[in-house]
Image 1 (cartoon, rainbow, N blue to C red):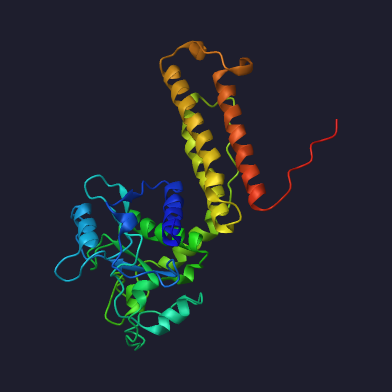
Image 2: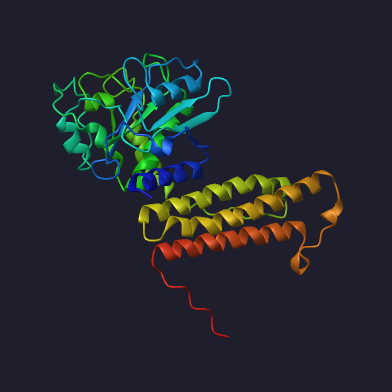
Length: 334
């Protein structure tokens, strides 16, 4: 597997852990503009608005950035994100594993700052910084976002997509939030993303910073109570999935243990819990007392599911211990 393939697969895993159904465009794992990443992987990330009405079909934007048009050949970016106008769903589509034709000419002032984890100065045109560098396509990954680029307010879901794609790249690349910049900071020719003042209507980097600072904290897992019914336990499964995703994200950031080694047992356990919750929930809805089911060790439905969740809790704890390089606790003496 190439460095770039590994990088983007990890980014997609983080996003999926956050609940996104990351879609893969046909040919994405072999697509590039013909150049190669200068360092084997991207070293920073450029944000763009695509100049498309919010009401336009999501796939119209996807197809344009994939295959290009009369103004610019594809691929035009690595990711395309937007809120589907038909369903309201937040969608992220992976376009290309290789370099893409999104940044164009830019300036070395911004490059030298972001690659050294120094926040950009701001819009290049505002600060009189001229374009003097043509190598950005081999250094910067890029995302195009489904927005017209005018004064149209950004939907909250689209802001969340922008935040999370950037944050996921920071986690996998080991970057700070300062490596995420706007096209207008890269080039004096540009105004995107569509901030209508120098700082804009929302501060994307601060949102990314908040996501990074909050995303690696493991919340305390919820404990079922006597009042919980089975459907409440079913709802809590989503909390546990998020909790596991945070633990996996921490493992990705540390990079001390192979992520597939970490992820496989978690997925297996979650799949087992998912299946049992669905079965127990269905039986409960049918009002069948105790479900007529005998579980190992004579446990009730509720206790059986709680035991599974406890096992998952221990599994994630053990993985975190491995990631941190901590020894296995010594069993208490008999």
